[in-house]
Amino acid sequence: MAVRAIVYERNGDPASVLRTVTFPPEPLSRKSIRVKVLLSLVNPSDLHVVHGSYAIQPDPREVDVNGKRKTVYLPGNEGLGEIAEVGPDVESLKSGDWVVFSKSQSGTWSSGQVLEEDDVIKIDEGSGISAVTAATLTVNPATAYKMLTSFVDLKPGDWIAQNAANSSAGQAVIQLASARGIHTINLIRKKDDFAKTERLLKDLGADVVLTYDDVADDERAREVVGDKEVRLLLDCVGGQGTKDTLRLASKGSHLVVYGSMAQEDLRLPPFLLIFKDIHVRGFWRTGWFNSSTLEERSKFLDELVQVMVNSKFKEPVHEIVKIEGTLSDEEATGKVQEIFERVNKGTGGTKIILEVETPRGF
Ligand SMILES: NC(=O)c1ccc[n+]([C@@H]2O[C@H](COP(=O)([O-])OP(=O)(O)OC[C@H]3O[C@@H](n4cnc5c(N)ncnc54)[C@H](OP(=O)(O)O)[C@@H]3O)[C@@H](O)[C@H]2O)c1
Image: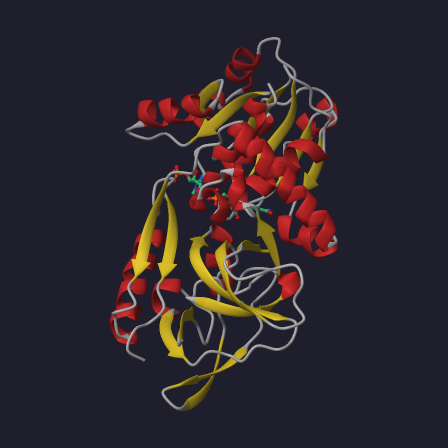
């Protein structure tokens, strides 16, 4: 069956450079697997990849489009796949298994991929995890879980603070922290529907939800913190967002920087760092996955799935956008451009999930 993929030939604005192509299926080698991509995520890092501003790029791929050889890049790093076929030497997977992608930049914005057995991790469908939760597992919940368990030995009753708390990553932090009895102070941007977002986050287990303005000076921040000891601060904003979040720090806190939504350098007031002895660290889930063994990654994800299922983890707020198999490549490209124009404007905390159907009639 033909494969449809969203691709780019040169870096740039995703709304301009992405297009959809259809090409014949690749043959399977003895150790490879054919994966049908059921759902794939559009994450902020994917936009950086297409722009060319991320640390890594997908490998260039030679594909046959309308009889012409083309070199293209297939973006898409996260998603849920179903094994469609396995090579004769594949032992750990069989047709119908659910898998997530452990190889970075696997090209998940497509209807299917041929990969190696070790490029994916099997997900136990019987665990009760939903397709959307499984599709969104390896980036945000994995990052949240790793950050909550790696830097500070948090105990039930401890406090942490984070910014961009309404992001999918922030929602995962709230839920995974709350499941362990860890309290959260959550900063978000001022918005007309603040009360709605506050309700959403509190329903996930957030203790305190505030805007950056609420902690915009030391006195207001002190009032918010009171006698709480805030031991871990998670920052995916940068710029002023870092400075506002740091005001909530207690002595000896760890600031973990894992994103740069404001695309500005961190503002780190020297006296705050000095007098409060703040430890500043960075975290990159891809870097950690790449430096771990398949066994370690599988064990980590099994544990995470268990925690999520046991704590009745809620799916991130999302919208599934289907690229129908009945569309021509030109029509599908038009749809993709519309999606990324919306993404460029910001989707207000709603995660866009793609469902690229296998093209029909090719
Ligand atoms: N290092 C890692 O391994 C790793 C792993 C996962 C995620 N991340 C990073 O975590 C961040 C969140 O990812 P996500 O998938 O959860 O994103 P998301 O669901 O798309 O949410 C984006 C968030 O960023 C906020 N935001 C956007 N522009 C902003 C600005 N200029 N100032 C302050 N806030 C801004 C949005 O707030 P509004 O609703 O107010 O627009 C929203 O809360 C990204 O930077 C991503 O790259 C890093």
